[in-house]
Length: 352
Image 1 (tube, rainbow, N blue to C red):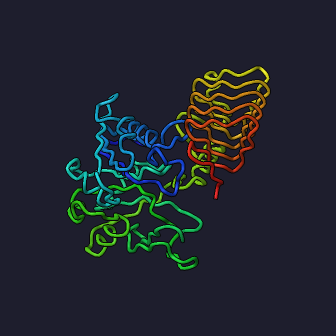
Image 2: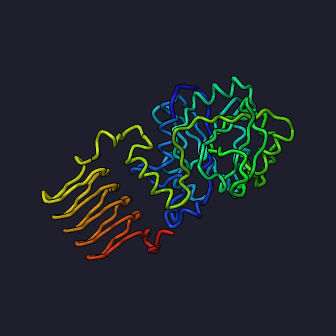
Image 3: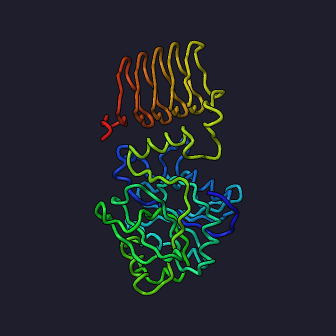
């Protein structure tokens, strides 16, 4: 996200994240850590850099985890309001539920995406097109698993196709989950009912002749909706395909080493990201492509590669972790071989 603009923004953060389980057994999907920071916190931070000072977070599943992290307060010049749906209302219903907070042009974000969409350029585009709704679109190789957007030569949207069969796609641009809305659009959404903005509201707007534009400029976009996509996002950060503001792994392969207490015999193969209060025993090998969360403890001779370790995890001596995610609070016993696995406190599941 880039630019400088003063608009209010809404994050849709109420989904249950069932496809991401067991990572979302105890936290909502927007709060899964990306390089040690909750995804939603990263997105909010980027919007603040854009000049946005008021944000509404629409919550439902595990809403207390979001409210505890952000709260309803002004923090460092950023006013954040949490609004709980009470019951799942879908994307459209959640937007309608927050209608009273928006009296002018505003931004909407799905909370499970990582992207570098230029928000200021998108808002400028929206105004140039005199649009009622502008939808950011991402270009993908295979759009058959997504909602596809068809548009004309003036970037006006002419149709939506949900999950077209391979070879029948009318474009390879898909809904990227970032929108600019004019508030009058919300009058078409019923109050208190589950509504899908994608399947219900957008086609209705087209049918009624509302002006809808597509913004087709995104260098990087990923929906962190499955464990595989979650791992891919970290891989993309490590190899430089996705840039995040505080880390540049193209130029510096190891971050946070000053926060770690390592035995002198520990070998580190970048890229590696370390959180705070990390302790690793003798003859361990860490990396490449490893995230180590806060409060990590590791015994002698452990080896960790291509894996994401959340906060407050401990592993015994001789543990081998490869291409795995270990969630917060887990303990891995001495000598455990952990490959292609998602560890949570309740379960140990293979990657699909």
